[in-house]
Amino acid sequence: MKKKTLIINGSPKCENSLTFKVAKAFADGLSAEDGSSAESIHVSKLNIKPCTGCLSCWGRTEGVCVIKDDSMPEVRRKILSADTIIIAFPIYFFGMPGTLKTLIDRLLGIMCTFSGQELDNIKAGRHALRTPRPGQRLAVIASCGFSESEEAFHPIKVQYDLSIGEGKYAHFCCPQLKALAQAGSGQRFEKICAISRQAGMQFAHGSIDPALVELLEKPVLTRNTYRMLMEKFWKDEKGADENDKNSSRSRRSRQVTGTALGRRA
Ligand SMILES: Cc1cc2nc3c(=O)[nH]c(=O)nc-3n(C[C@H](O)[C@H](O)[C@H](O)COP(=O)(O)O)c2cc1C
Image (tube, rainbow, N blue to C red; front, side, top):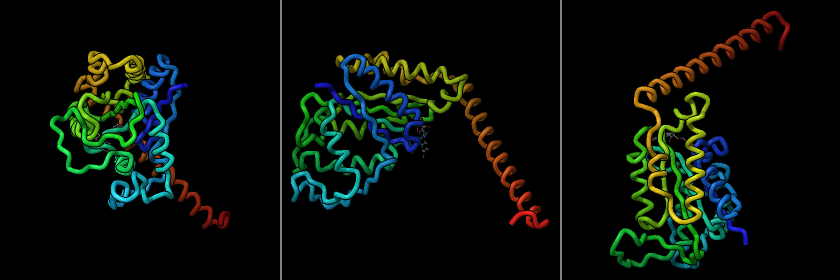
């Protein structure tokens, strides 16, 4: 049977998200090697209610969530039937975007109930699936604005190591993506996507070569170029905002003049 890959995109920019584009390239590489088909879900297009914290899914209902009138039942089905799950998101305040965290919290029911069992090492992970799908794998692909991707990703890595288990999932975090997409005609960004595709191809056969991960996580732009590009970006943004304000001011004044002369209502 054809393998299935599910990309869960946590960026509110949906299809335009740079992280999503990197994740999609990864899924393309994976598909080139294992013939899998990829489906993407954009978290901010879904209706996901926050977990109520009732713990019914662990105590009373054997994994079933009490909230049934939102997108989560379908998301859970997709997650449980995927061979590879790619969670893609931009780093927000050294964490994941809140909408994605809301989705993750709602997955408690598919995890084993915690009854105080002790784990002797971080490699085990504290949230195992209730009904694991044999061979199911996870890749966490993040991006950040800063140059220091290891620092930006660190809190996420701790979260995933504790939940899933250290070494049990692939991960990388691309730095400077916004600036890279701005630089030149986006060629540097395209290069990152090409490396991500290669990483996906390697992932299909096992793990990603650490040298490739290093390439994905290494800041491409020097500190000075990065600063220059970002300063230009904010300046252009301000300019665009001023232009917007000016054109709406002149539109309004045309309307007022028109009204005063009795030409427009
Ligand atoms: C609300 C918000 C918080 C952010 N916080 C961080 C941060 O803590 N560290 C960082 O390096 N980048 C931060 N960024 C920048 C994004 O992670 C970065 O621009 C990312 O590459 C955007 O990816 P996307 O195009 O997939 O949405 C933040 C952006 C936003 C909008």
